Image (cartoon, rainbow, N blue to C red; front, side, top):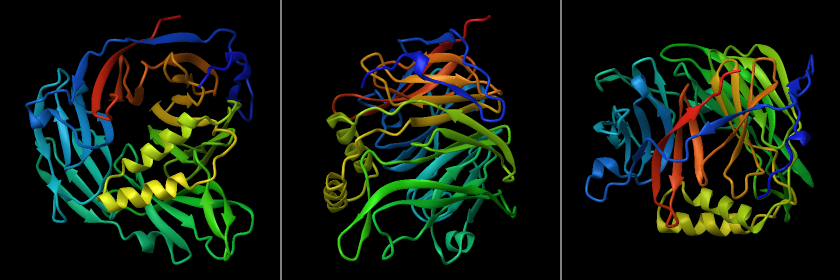
Length: 375
């Protein structure tokens, strides 16, 4: 992967389209981590099987959602292990296939793949365990699935358009994002978005996504939700009740797909876990995907605040992933380089939370300092 000159990038509000600053500030992620988790050869509390999700907790504590075995791993800001929350299972306070974690004030919320939403209180006690009936959220015409959690603990359900048996040639599925409020709260439609581009082959024709695939990305902060298909030049800005606030135009250029892109795509699919047979089926399916000529435009989004959006480009090279930081007007205010091999998962005022894998695929969680130079 090679970096594009910053001059080819233009991000602005679609309505007002302000210009790109001549020289956005360079915010610096310290190359040496303040804290590294998962590196202990002896303490099982400081080892991870398969990291599913990460978040900063109160007082800069670190919350790690581990999928193998399923549990919420907690650490102080200094990296000292705290008691785990939950365990594998299908009962109250247990997880079958955890998909997302969110920290809501002093509580921890976990969303499971079967639609269960579990809330643990400040002392780690089980506060609430409820099941979201996914089919009833989407209706019979849509395939339901877990989308993730919002910052207030609301679940997001994906309602994916059914295409089998009627697709011809190129296609793009429509995916609805439905917000399910905590407790007995109601439903809000965040919107319906194009996603999952691919092609139909065979008789009858069946959808076959490209590799690397298009993702429907979203994140939120302060009641504002940002949503975009990763290969589209527009980020929709919505309220958590579904109200439309506008959009940001993103002219990040895709680049040619490399063999490394394909390898990483297959590895990401294999990390979902499962039995050896599951792994074999996933590998055969992934390796049989048609290869796209160009990458998507955006790799990931992080809403660090209602008026601070981090956008990861696909053009990272040997220098590490490149992120652009947008302000409330959609202007680029900073460029950030992540340490080589680091996946930034959460952002605080003075730190970033990172997932890092070594050459053998062993996962570790790191906290790196973030320096934001003043004007």
